[in-house]
Length: 109
Image (cartoon, rainbow, N blue to C red; front, side):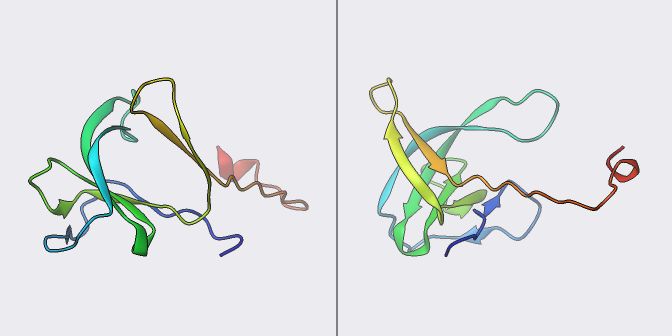
């Protein structure tokens, strides 16, 4: 859908979704950059792509089916190979908003 922002459900304390019995279209190990803390480290995660749901879900191990989070792929513009043999980048839409007539100076501090 045009204008729809990608859904990124980072590791949270919400109820975990159990995907046992659901067949993934592709799966394998990837490194995911963390979003918590001042230093963003990479963690090895097992990913499964569910094309029908437009989701790239990640799990702690390949034996685990309770997802830690998911990356919505609605709005993907490009999936390109990297220089590494098995690497790839996903290029998503970027949204820019030009808001005029609002003084947000004090609320951003």
